[in-house]
Amino acid sequence: MAKPAARSKTVADLLVQQIIAAGAKRIYGIVGDSLNPIVDSVRRAAKAGADIEWVQVRHEEVAALAAAADAEVTGNLAVCAGSCGPGNLHLINGLYDANRSRVPVLAIASHIPSKQIGTGFFQETHPDRLFTECSVYSEMISSAPQAPRVISSAIRHAYGSKGVAVLTIPGDVADLDVAAELPNVDFNPASPRVIPADVELQKLADAINGAKKVTIFAGAGTRGAHDEVLAVADKIAAPVGHSLRGKEWIQYDNPFDVGMSGLLGYGSCHEAMHASDLVILLGTDFPYDQFLPEDVKTAQIDIDPTHLGRRTRLDVAVVGDVKETMIALLPLLNGGRSRRFLDSMRKKHIKAMTGVVGAYKGKKAEDMTPIHPEYAADILDQEAADDAVFTVDTGMCNVWASRYITATGKRRVIGSFLHGTMANAMPHAIGVAASSPRRQAIAMCGDGGLSMLLG
Image 1 (tube, rainbow, N blue to C red):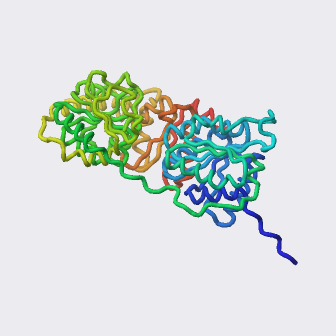
Image 2: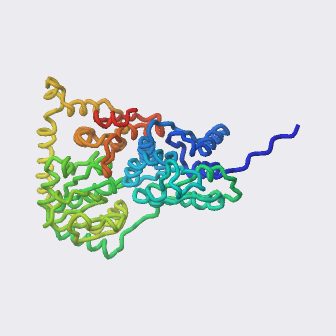
Image 3: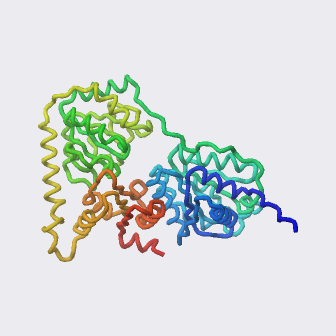
């Protein structure tokens, strides 16, 4: 009896093969007719031993938010998928969040049959247009020969531009046989060292050496540069404040910490910046310009030149990685300056933490009725693992997490800090738990946010 002919490789097979090669291990989504070729390819790949799984959710927004958190904690490509029309439209809010958080996510938006596109067919939308604003790459695959390079390009954009890449694929095109495929390549090479130009570095050093009181305000761009930033702060006796996204990277083991500014701050960071002769914005695109001083000389260091000067005045602009900049800057700085300004700002911060913030902690709060949420957050902070991942809903959960969850250098705090959507904590926690099953995932959900996507 003759053996059945081997199945040809389809566009869907090629897509799954490239996703696996790029380091993705999960696809979050809801199965739908137009996605069937891709879902079946995932099933066959997993059955053959590939490290890939389909994670079924109940709402496509959950799929996109889960993928965002997956990518955040692993650094690898995460994938979400939605069926044609209404299915993939549900992805859009989560994709906005992922793209603004600058994490590598691939979104698969399946489409109506290709011959029906442009006829006002049932469930017809145009995903390749709709997702343009919340992605770094959005293209439609309309033929099998086109597929290999477009899939590869989408993955490269997600990694290289740190954002969302969207592939729109009609269901019939996903099931086409494909003859050509690209050779195995490295989708995510190591990032280059971005070292500031000597002339700009010297301008920064001159500005610091010429100032009596300097305050550092640190953002998420200080990730991986904790020790280097503190070495500079120590040499120039600078208080170090931080944004919410900068907290997990700079607050721990920091004897120069003066906390946050903005709506979540306690006052001492704001005062330190406004009382300075020079403010250094380090790897932050802090959007609340009303909390930044207008009349204080300001230096900004960022790896993205488009961030420079778009929030507040800018006197010294430096393009570079924060860690590399701090290493190169340190030998150019004069030491031996007075620590009076640093000490006074630190005292104000400690007073705020033990007074206003500390009023709802420990013995002071045990007998309060009803139980205050700050007290619950403080207990959670004490009980959580040293490397726990907290996901926090937008709103008051942000306030409680930012004020009462202690950074350890190992913990993560993930939220919709730039997009500001509701209902992110639960789906973010799904992505964390799926991608890091041995790590404690704690979702701090608001009642409205939880009920919005609990189904």
